[in-house]
Length: 449
Ligand code: NDP
Ligand code: 2IT
View (tube, rainbow, N blue to C red):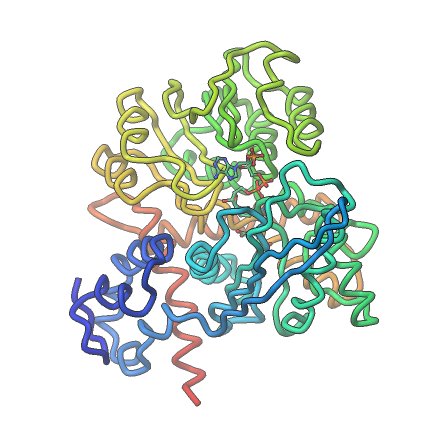
């Protein structure tokens, strides 16, 4: 794929190898988007003149810092903290914080790059960012989590603000961590302001933010199936993950009449042929909130089968919803899903499907909903939380849920409008182009310094 670059590089790969060496996740995310938007850039003099390509793939700012904190034994531990402020053309930076040992600049750059397009798709004024730490919270006490969050904010507070950057949660950063982070900011700055989303409702958080990503995934799936004269009702769904996105996606799927037969975590997956119920989902949430808890205990509580160290893609179902982490569904998994007659794959996680797995799905004409569209409900409700904080008011759950459904429908419509390909809809292409146009137009309009 050759680009009209102002540099000497021959193609995108050479450019990325030079500018972002040893960052495979970031390369993967850029290559996926660029395949769709290159024709748009090539046809636009303003985009070429403003060099939107090179500017879009270089983060505006990458902040890296030391997080030194004291564990329960009194020893001092050191982790790395980061905030990648990728693109602020359409609004203050916005995106989650992830605490996981796999966090590194490549992972955060891919996430912040994707977030830029996702946030644009919501129609709300939010730039793209991501951050976090290589801190592993597995098995840590509540006091250790609090001290880590406090130490992390001791540096992060300098780089965020309601008009600068508003982080939220992501893997291993939920309501508890956001509470500790918010408390630390308030004590350091002496200000109560909307610098994080996903806050508790008692301190200016939005109703429905906890549910928003998972519910939004199922609203998107509903729209996608409806536009193919189908519905969720009666479908069998495989879900991976057992965290925020997975459990709320499962809850909404069950409410809409589907049978959800799996969940998973980093230790394996559970197959429940009878299907999840609200009671089982509530149990999973309570169980996984305990330090270091494995999903394996599900079969002791409810029966079913535990597959240690495996992913659920070998199960037979109508829909697969990867909701755990990046690159969790590979080429062989996609082949197995296709062989078993899967109708659609919808990404609740960010980039859970590898590039070669996507190719298998598209060659087999299997519907595919990319994360940057399908999981945008979380950041969309974060955007609504920012507005509520600005106006010092709060909206009720029904109002927020309605707004979420409308935003997911609008995103679906944008994907359909921009994703036309051989008489069908390529949702990934639609999401990439629709997100891109908004950001690129803002970049062109704002010039350079
Ligand atoms: P949680 O921390 O609540 O849950 C993550 C789940 O994924 C856990 O079950 C965890 O298992 C599993 N998991 C994490 N890493 C791995 C791994 N390397 N291999 C196997 N399993 C793994 O996170 P969320 O539900 O918030 O996030 C899940 C995905 O959704 C991520 O890709 C995130 O970026 C994306 N997302 C999240 C949004 C949000 O609002 N929270 C919004 C949009 C996207 P274990 O407990 O064993 O670690
Ligand atoms: O990946 C994501 O969209 C998130 N983790 C949510 C980001 C946010 O700012 O709500």
